[in-house]
Length: 137
Image (cartoon, rainbow, N blue to C red; front, side, top):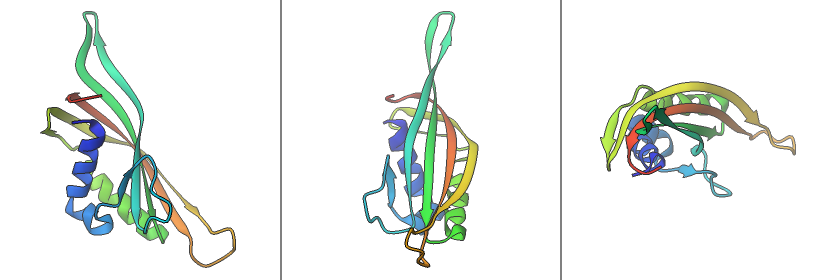
């Protein structure tokens, strides 16, 4: 199991997140016209732990998660649900040992329509550091 597959499994299996987006959690980018609210995730970096004897079975991943909703409150609510599901999480599945998930940062911004209409798309982005062993890179 990859870290991305485990992230998807944790978030879509969490009742708080699933109540808001169901399975509308997309790798890299959401499909055009995706229904709001939704979230998308991507791997922003990976580091393998090293010792004097060489690499060890410990990897640190930076994962970016962007949450989108029709209102700023909706985006913030989704960000809180994602944080509650991930921050401090530990588990094992499919040969991947999730040793810890840390909330590194969160930013909120909004995308307003260019035509001056009333409806916008609001977003909140977060970065999580995921420590794990085993699984695939």
